[in-house]
Length: 392
Image 1 (tube, rainbow, N blue to C red):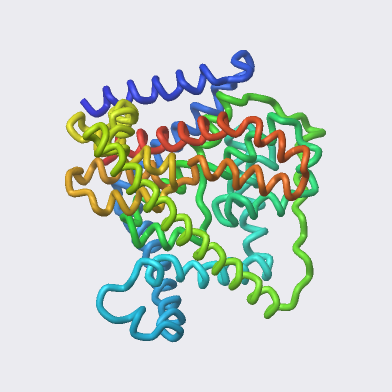
Image 2: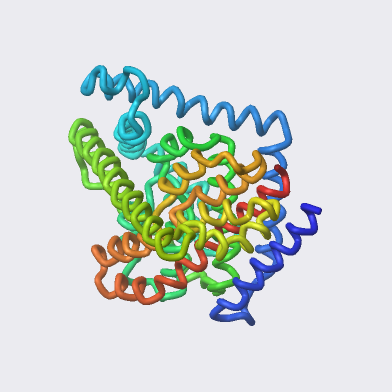
């Protein structure tokens, strides 16, 4: 039965992408089929083989160790508050982002990350049929973050036509920053985080290839990565420490605001309609949960968490998922994969603002296709979750 539902799900996803396509005649199906095959292969390996289990355990173990090092710094500053009894969410999940950010900075400074990103991107460009810039951007987004990635390609931002700019922005919204992967692993099972990171990379290209098809000519297929300003090692460390701390504070502030706002709206809806706002959204998203492979009896509860991510952010939705006791392990896995991305309304503003800061005219272009950007990025999450559901 789950295979029939998955086939239905894939058909619906591709139909929705096809409806939103800007140039249906130029959709290239061979790269799409190749990437789909790779997704099936990688999903099977991650969920159903000892090699996949070993890799996931190793990846999770690295972040677990890094977070333990981070907690040494958090514990030193906050003492018993961060080490005794039940550790507050801010200390245990958000503040370790500061240390992960520093490590990313060191890898950037020593030119290790730029080398890895560039050559993984080159390999991907042979598979996805897109340009070197698009492939580089997709890998860089998954490591540097959805706003920082544009700084590294700012030389080309002003020269890009709208179709290529859309793909860059879609990649940024469909992935997550490596600096907060550790935080996700504290909230959901690490294997789902790893699966989502891998699947979203290809799902982003698949959906973009349908919604926004184009061919990059040899003359256009260039990649110019902006070299970082020369800093001393300790200047760089200081900058990345502050960047990581800003991320932690911003996420904390957004959580306070969104959780409080949703709580208030739920109270208003319960008082007037006898049903919470999140439950109402759950009914709207239930069909998408079903085509992803969620059992019918759990679709409303799962849809509610999915909708929460869309209207707020993935952290709020992950908190709700952690509190839920009505979902089966398979449903938890499918929804977890769906949640690991930046596909939400606030990300449209973040990405448009990041591009506008580098090139005002292009930032306005991004703002104009903002809803279409969210539409595509949401389909990316649904596609990844549907494929993961086949192997759970």
